[in-house]
Each structure stands twice: as structure tokens, then as C-alpha cells.
Image 1 (cartoon, rainbow, N blue to C red):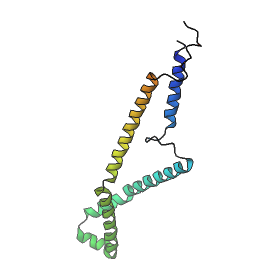
Image 2 (tube, rainbow, N blue to C red):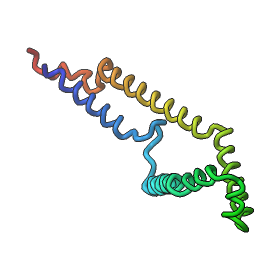
Image 3 (cartoon, rainbow, N blue to C red):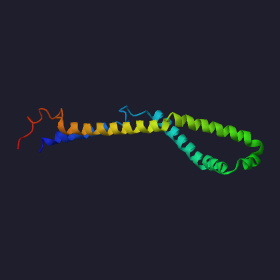
Image 4 (cartoon, rainbow, N blue to C red):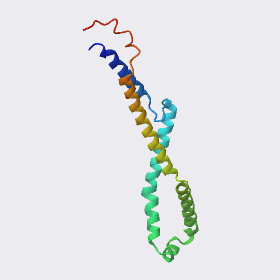
Length: 145
């Protein structure tokens, strides 16, 4: 019964090591400055996406529902500016879509998560099967029985 204690301690140390590994790629955790930069970038992207959903999409849907004759009258002198902006938006959407950036990013993220889970399982298996270095020779010092 006592011989199981060192194995349990090794198991706990192994779990602590896995907890310290915060990245799916096995890299060390980013420093505070890098974490802050990532946090700001994520907030900026989320804010931009929210604005697009709140403002841009309804505006485009409203414009698409109108007849060209009505748009010509409604927009008047601003028609050229609206056409340029719509063209730029379209080209950027096509750029992201044709290069499949978001789809590729999702695939990479799924692969990294699967690899991380698989590594976690391998680590847990090693903890159960590999003897703890501190356990070697410990049985000589423990009372039997």
C-alpha cells in the first residue's frame, strides 16, 4: 500500500507539468506582454465582427432589396462612393474566401486540439506504466507488509 504513494506523487507531478503546458503546440506560455497583445487583438476582431453584423449586414441587405432605379434616386451623388466601398468589401471577402483562410484556420485549430488530446492520453498512459524515478530503490527503505 505504501509503495503506491511515490507513484501517486509522480502522477501528480506529471499532471502539474501538463497544466503548465498552456499551448496546444507545446510551446511555453507567452509572457505577459504577448498575452496582453493577443487579448487586445481578439477583442478588436470580436468588436469588428460585431459592428459588421450590426451595421454593415443590415445596410447591405436593405440595399440589395431595392431596385437599381430606387437606389439611383436615393443615393444620388453618393452612388459612386457606395459603389467603391461595396467593390472594396467584395474584393476583401473574395480574398478571404478564395484563399480559404478561415477554413484552413479551423482545420489547423482542430488538428492542434486533437494532437494535444492525444499527447495528454499518451502522458497519462506513461504515468501509469512508467516507474517513477523516485520509486526505484524506495522499496528497500519501506517496511514490508
